[in-house]
Image (tube, rainbow over all chains, first blue to last red; front, side):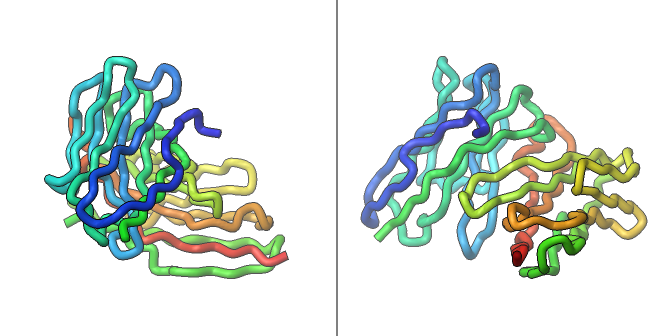
Length: 114
Length: 117
């Protein structure tokens, strides 16, 4: 158990809908990272927050947004969902802000868009 | 352009055999980090190792060892005396340094390792 929790574990929704994925980092970790893993795109970095501020942005679509709250948990919002958004979404956390920090991954949220 | 190639899509060996997973990378940066992650059937990603480009020493951790060769841009991973619990997908990743370096991390496509009893 990495200490990172993600909810929900599975999510099934329809095209056009909006969903929110939640992540709680390990105790003491200030950075939260979001990744998408899909069959066609592989593993891709989406976005990183450090102590409430956006730190790094990757291949995150404009339809997606994220935030990190004062208690350091983070939410990833996906809107106007398309079939291609079906993927496993991981959250990871680390103590420091640098991307080279050891990251601890949550179990992931499997999103299925029908 | 940065790239990570894991040419072995799938490997299957019998328990107790040694197995090497290849990782070849491309980068123009002189400083960078390399990682290996394990993704067991349960799905979560597990960090295995981080290597700084300035540190070419090979590393051994139990049955796991890593061979970093800058001259061939490779960072190979060997499991000695493999066990069924080693069955997983293994990812190699490349990361440049910098303030927002996390945005530039590149993962390989992964190698699915199956250990047969």
